[in-house]
Image (cartoon, rainbow, N blue to C red; front, side):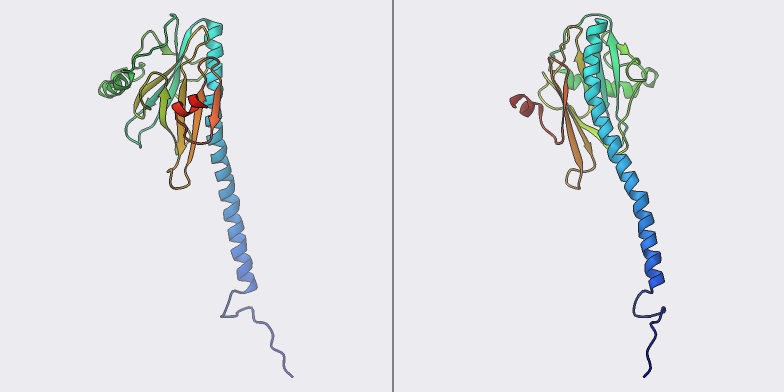
Length: 220
């Protein structure tokens, strides 16, 4: 009786050697991709936490220094343009603004700055404010693919999606109540959303892992 030996060159399927090679390739690809995904997630989480810590830090600094501070957000209208945020300080005691026309003014100031590149480093609507680099070293950006979707500030009738947005921190410890909405990717394509809710009395910020309006937050 003759016994057939298993062939390593079986045309009907992969050989053991080929299977081992494929597995090695898959393992290598997974080893490369997973750290990148992990690093990206860590960067996004760190960016959200940074906004939370920054709010409390500004509230404490404003009281300690006896000066008004504010976070400035630059939100271009075009999705492909870079967004920025930074810190400004004023040595004069100011009242927290309640003007509901800030929204239209912010968009106008953004257009004015585009036309006047000479004033690129100047703050929109300075109002006695100037950039402060003691907390943040100049203008900051979010990690790649992550954006400010909109920002809500008490006194404004709707979220601001384009223009300059200000969240003020008063020397007496008062803070403008606000909701900072961040996103990564598309909402209907496994995108991620966060809301950083800023409390007006303490400056404490809460991270919510979804888009929640300022009105909903105040009703909780």
